[in-house]
Amino acid sequence: MKKKIMTLALTAAMAASMGMTAFAGQWVQNTTGWWWQEDNGSYPVSQWKWLDGNNDGIYECYAFDSNGYMYADTTTPDGYTVNKEGAWTIGNSVQLKFAKDMQNESGSNDNTAADNSTSDNTVYTNEDMVGTFRINDENREDYFEFMLGAGDSIAAFYYDTDGDTHIYNFSKVSNTKYRDSSNSRNLTIVDYDTIIVNDRTYIRD
Image 1 (tube, rainbow, N blue to C red):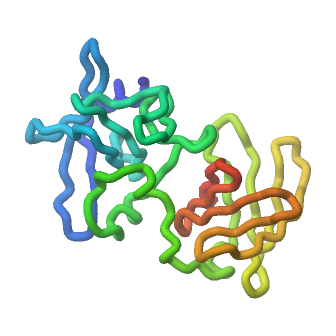
Image 2: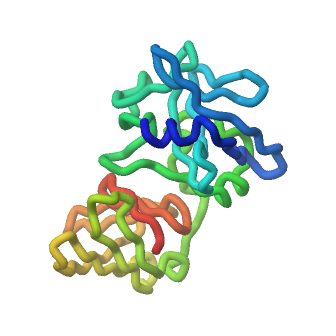
């Protein structure tokens, strides 16, 4: 819980939506566990919440029980995995949102993990996704280079942790989902800067 120890003395900004006032808060711990306390003394109960606990502009998603304590290193009652620091993960990758994404979203930042997954309403063109995406895991160094595709496909070079290069051709399944059937790779576009390939998160370089 190193991150939360560092943030106990810091004020955190939580941009919930466009036009909404940014509230401040902090992580608090007792012998039972951790909870998030707003400046007005309230705390989230029986809900998920995107939080930028160290004010670095990157939000992680946390689940809180009926008493307001954060779930950690477990599967939540609604079936999602959180790591030992309480952050929602898919595979070994912490799911992230960035400040600009939070500002562009309407409504509250209090919902379920499923509600925070990628929507098919946004359409990304081949040109949008050209670039390098690196694994969101400090213990790995693999990455994808997306090239301009043709029609409803995206061509990509994948450089694995051994330095080997693989070529993928992702075909469009929906607005935000692609698949390379021959290599059993499923691609989800979370936003312009974030993709998920087979449960691993990659961030634009």
